[in-house]
Image (cartoon, rainbow, N blue to C red; front, top):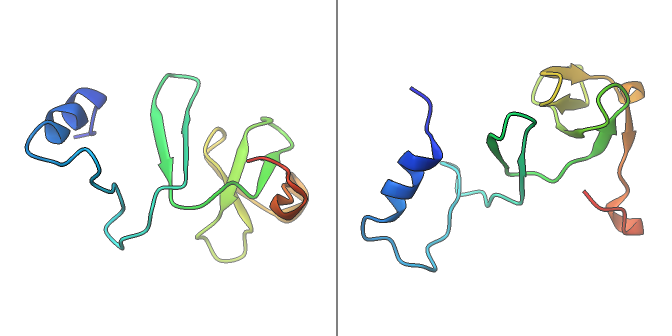
Length: 94
């Protein structure tokens, strides 16, 4: 069963402090939050590394060996030539 915003609100209203940190099970902070075209909330523990050439949406680091990025919009792992890299050091936002 998928966690809904309603479920999350109910969980947050049960004794959690307002300053409680939200993290994944490996205690990593969520550093990037977006909504998809269907209005679903997506939390990521890593910043985007690029923009997909096909969809124009953010690309995140892939966990699949042999691929560099993953695009949630197309639900595909990508090779480096399939997206434009974001250079955070130059101030590019993502």
